[in-house]
Amino acid sequence: NYMYSHPDSSVLFMPANAGIVLNHGSARGTTKGAEDKRPNAALQWSTTDRKTQYFLGKAPEDLLSEGYASVVVDVVATRDLAVDEEVLIDYGEEWEEAWNEHVRNWVPPAPTGGRG
Image 1: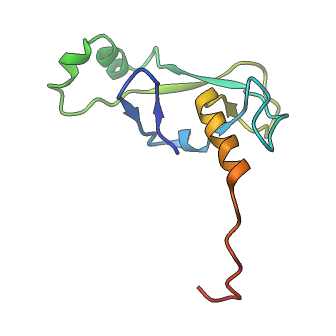
Image 2: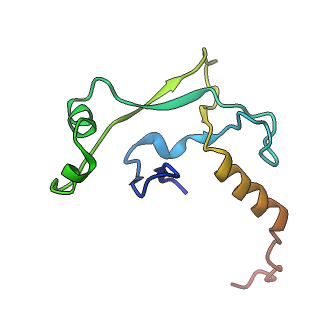
Image 3: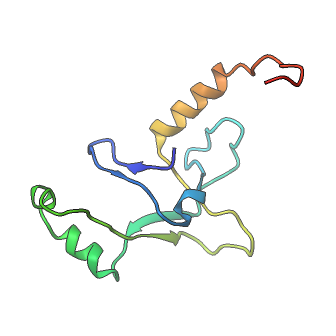
C-alpha cells in the first residue's frame, strides 16, 4: 500500500522515509468514511537533489545499466497548513475506487472468543 506508481508505467517507488505516513485526501470528496478530507499537499520530483536530476535526465533504457536509481520526491504544501494539521495527498481515482469497493464488501471476522 505504500508504493508509488503511475498507471502507464511498470516502475514502482518505495519510500525510505516519512513518505509512508502520507494519508489520502480525495480531490473528489468521494472516499468512503473520509469525504471531508481533501488533499493539502502534492508530490513532485526534487529540483535540488543532484542524483534525482541525473536519473530524470536519462532515457529509461539507459537506467537499465544502473545498479540502482535513488530519487528524491518532495512533499509540497498546496496551501498554508495549520500547526499539527494532517498532511494529505490524493492517491488517485483508481486507488479511491478500490478502497470504496473494499469498504462496501468488507465483512469483519467472526469473534474468536479470545483464542487465536
